[in-house]
Length: 166
Image: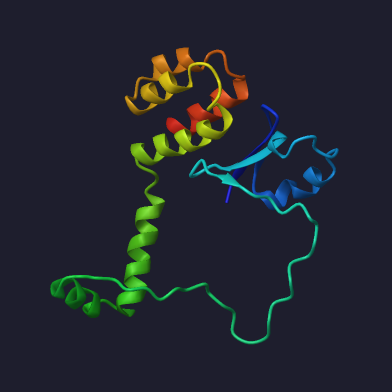
């Protein structure tokens, strides 16, 4: 997972949390917890960083857990028939299909939603927020830029990168 960390309104770290967690532990105590915020670069959601410095618990003995969850999937009989004819079985092929779709990237809607989630936290009380969100979903980039102009540059840049990835 890649995250972007803001200290007040400036980006202070970007990348994998493991890369910079040590440096963040050295920050002076925060006056407000909202001064240090981290966001998932894929979804725009706010994430919690583990800055405790504690080592992860030791792995238990035996076969490692793959994190597989059993859930119900409803398919038509012809879909089950096709899955059964594939090498590896239904679960393997469903995982492959999902992984392929995930690698194809995010849709325009997912990009706009990520920017919206980020902006709700970082710019929800700033001037022009509502108009900027309307422009974001209308794909009016120039209008969005005009509405976001009074905001700190780091917030504008990150919102733009989430909404319109290059």
